Image: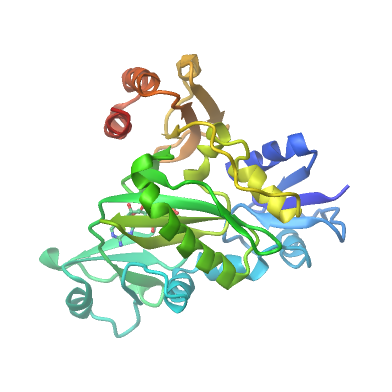
Length: 357
Ligand code: ATP
Ligand code: MG
Ligand code: MG
């Protein structure tokens, strides 16, 4: 039987495997961070995907990445580097925050002249959950760290109204299909919660779909891709792209008849694909650096995904999907969570309640 191998065995790989089960797809996440000398039993017709954009080279990762059926092979490195990712957006004329590469001769004063008194430096590779960011503030005369030259981009600080994301899929025959936009709340650079769909965002859906179609078609991409955006009034600016299933698409596990993990697998395996039906709105709450609490699953509308990782400060260790059949249900559940969850959750939970009142 054909297998789908996944570069990486974190929670995204696990949820891909989980989603493959009802379709009897044999999905095999591979630990590429601790490679062994063992050869994987790869067959010629197997399919390879990844749950992350970057991985260390080893005989195991090469076995996967050099397989002819490594779908989107060259795209991972291109999007893993913010320099080539932002260059792609410019080439495709997809709106993004104004930026430039930080080079040897780049001066702080020139960056402030070009982008204003707050400039965000982002490491070209390896950043996630807001790690690998450095603010340059003119008022405080912050300087560019020496080892960030040629290794970072400088971006204009966007005074956005809020953050949204679009998760879509492109099929092997080039059709692009989408979920509704999700509203995302980040705190200290890390995604805390998402809500989708929201009627008040629906007027942005067509433009978001046009942008992500341009990107996926431009790359001849196959599978699920996520596009994080800033909403500034009625305009969208792309913040970043992820060539994979994405945290802001986890709500689809509860809210849609095909979730993002199954959608990705269907595209990779060339199975029938149509626009996923949304059953009901959903709230996704990320569980970050907190211990598992079984009271969460006493909520009548909750589904828990616990990743079984060691709990560490700032680390995503699970998520909770709450279906939102009506406003009262959400308000009741969130009120309970507010009692059970620590201080850093109070603001995000309040933010959720606001959307449902
Ligand atoms: P992720 O975990 O989503 O991969 P990341 O570390 O790759 O995160 P970004 O998504 O680029 O980093 O940035 C994280 C957050 O920082 C954004 O969601 C946003 O809240 C804030 N941010 C990023 N770029 C800007 C900007 N140009 N102006 C203002 N805020 C920004
Ligand atoms: Mg990122
Ligand atoms: Mg991001």
